[in-house]
Image 1 (cartoon, rainbow, N blue to C red):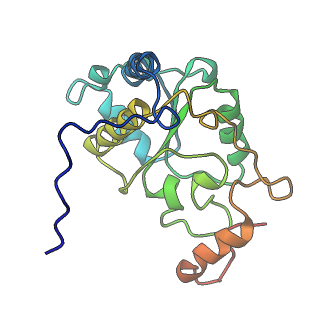
Image 2 (spheres, helix red, strand yellow):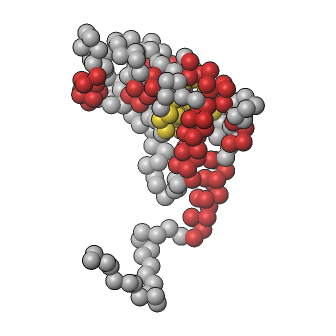
Image 3 (cartoon, rainbow, N blue to C red):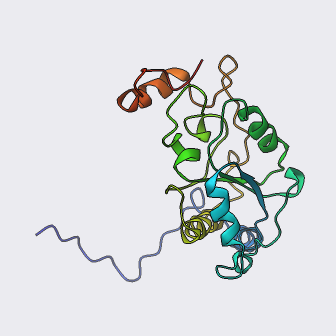
Length: 208
């Protein structure tokens, strides 16, 4: 009936190659716990999603209970970049410069449909998803998403931070964009993803 045999109760296995030490795992827990509960956001609001983000910091929703009451309008002192709203191509270099100025460890939340996919602005002037210019950790859907949606995305980011391990050497590697297109995703891949959703003029999503 597809049942597996019951394992022997006295059988204990230990593989030092695949298991981290007790001290390392405990240190990971403490470091990740402190990081997850003291995330300082860098607001990057360009549209109506920013209004919902402001509401999440007000008294009704109280973002301070997540340790995020300090809005860092300086990228040097921020941990989380929250992009709320559409990003035109003229604004894309500014967003990338802010991301590059943030120190590690850092994370990014894409808030709303416009920041995640371009939303209704499927044209030559708007970036079709900020993940083509900077790496994104959490996507918050909605147009615009309610403050509860952003808070759920923050909780998802906290869970992701808690699962990080210092043994992963590639965790803090900076992603290098394509030297020709300056995008993290190749223009051909962006066009293939955008073909079924092209606008009336059938313009390419990469814009390059």
